[in-house]
Amino acid sequence: MEERDQPAADTPRRHEGRLPTLTLRTRVTALAVLAATVVLVGGYIALQALQRRDIIAEVRGELNEDGEVVTRLLMAHRLNRRLLREDLVQVVDARGVIVSASVPMVGYPPVDFMVPPPERTRTEGHSCRVQAPDGPCYLVTAFRVREGPRTWFVYALAPEPGLVPDVTQAVLTALPVPLGVALTGYATWLAAGRALRPVEKITAELDEITATDLQRRVTVPHREDEIARLAASVNATLDRLEGAVARLRGFVSDVSHELRSPLTGLRMELELALSDVTDERSRETLTTLQDITERLQAVLDDLLAIARLESGKHITKERIELQELADRCVLARPRRARFSVENGEPVIVLGGRSELDRLLTNLLDNADRHAASSVTVIVRSETADDGARTAVIAVLDDGPGVAPEDRGRVFERFTRLSDARHRDAGGTGLGLGIARDIATAHGGSLDLTGRLDGRSGARFVLRLPALPPEEGSQD
Image 1 (cartoon, rainbow, N blue to C red):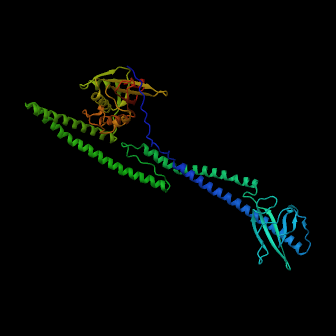
Image 2: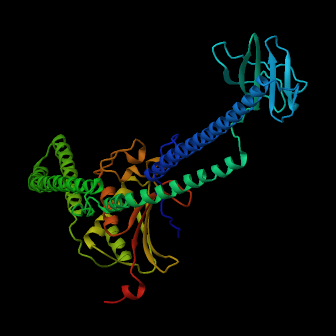
């Protein structure tokens, strides 16, 4: 029987229905680009407005000059009916009759524009009701001319400049806008990345700090700024956390040690009582108490194991042949199910003998509790493309198995699932978590999957770094 074990994918949880969160660097850059766009586009629009205003002022100056020239001709009685001018000029009397007009205005009706009031000699404005060439809207300057009882009105017109008077100039002026926005975004991206680089370093260092490595601290930048204060605050928090965890671990270890002696005495008293009791009901009660005491003893042993693992104490490692270890763990004590260990090539790892023995024993006990009839242990090795070798131990049972959504939870401490496989069958609820912690402490992994042959049951896969064959064969 040979199976190809694949590591279980550890995919990060994602919040369904939520948009992905942008990084701080991206948000800062986006805000800078938005601000630069608003400023540059606003400046461009303001520049176009100023240019249009200057052009209008220049046109109005020309209209004033045209009107004054015609006014002087009118006062000197030298005004002909047709003005030999290319400007848009029209002279109308008080009755609204056209007295004279420039060549382009010949044939057009009187200009429809408000006349200057009696107290003024000139008015300026714009109108879209005027009928003249090159429309539709015009800048108009109207002059009131008096000579005795007679009054004339001189109108000088010019087409009103559009929103973009000079298209070529507007295009050339617009070219720096996208360039400025791009440069602003690029510079902000670089500056934000440089400013956040210490934060990324702090994040990476925090990710490497585990519960067994709380003595490590993050690097505090030399410059006195917000990031340096953040790093100092993180280190202070780690100091407090390390102290709290040390006190908690000490408490668990002390309590476990203090309770072992009373429990040992209690077990001895129960065994002595069982040897003398003759009443069947009393024997059942004492037997139940003995089972409860043994389970409590197992919980204390597991708590001590957790305290040792989390304390970060150095594991004394030696070369261990996994095939031999699996055989010994299977034969160590009688079990309910039928166990079989498939023989394969020798696989040697570097690890703590007592720790790996406990890891494998926990897996075998768990499989024995939940198997229907049989448990299979497979020991083999894998070689990656780069030549690295991995030792693999697969423990398979023919029990009800574990639902895919619950496979990660079985490694949590004191977890109790509702299905038939995880009914209370004598386990402490700590064994699988301890097994995974031991695997992690050895640079390996422990995962739970379904069986690959399609049968019901669970399949625990332990992976550890394996020694090369030539190194493993040396004494």
